[in-house]
Image (cartoon, rainbow, N blue to C red; front, side):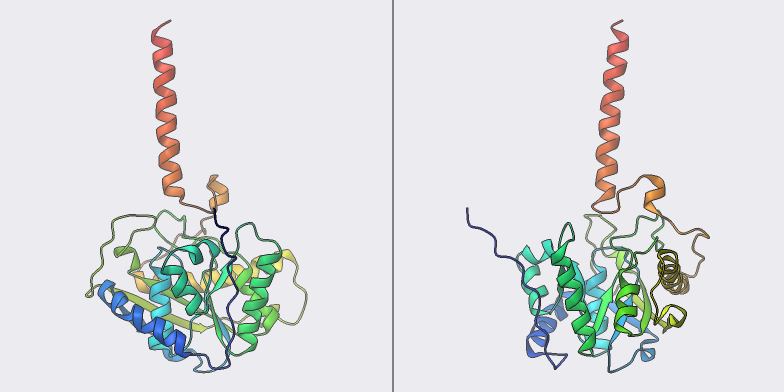
Length: 280
């Protein structure tokens, strides 16, 4: 059996919108436009040049396509994401990710992911942008509101001294439900993307943060994202942010599938107990 080649980290080019990225963008353009229409709001708030971290909510696996389209065709920037390394091994998807200059995040963390973070630093130092979904996975919140965030985006922005802007999107869940298999594309379907003001992280810059302060800064980021989602949905989010750890849910993987499998196993166990009791 042939040994799989290791996933390489992307190269950084001085020119942000490279010819190879242009090729990828125009391959994906007709595909994306057949799936949905991105409707931008407030995108003039984002700098046309220079580095920043863009953070947003994560509802479905279609989200990166919507945000990438927004970044390339609306902002005229080169969107760079931190993506699961396993995706780089998927035919065509891996090709697109590599050509587009996306950064692999390796399972299990360790030194390889240190290299990934250093690469994200280099992209920002070179004046590029980094897109991050701070939740780290699709939201577990029952009604698709942003859940608890992870500190990676905040740490990256503070370490590189670049600004952070929040965006939110809504509508992608109608094309592909969270962990769903019923794909319902439509060029007439809107995915609204809204941009907020720069998040003020000045109280946390220029010093070593405690764990509590890092959590506080991360919560500020998630609050700004949630406020934008509220604008798009026209309703208020729950007062308490959802945390999967408080409900015993796993924080990675398809929790919907896992819960269904657990329910089936519980039903089988109950049936077996009932059968056993009837024989007594």
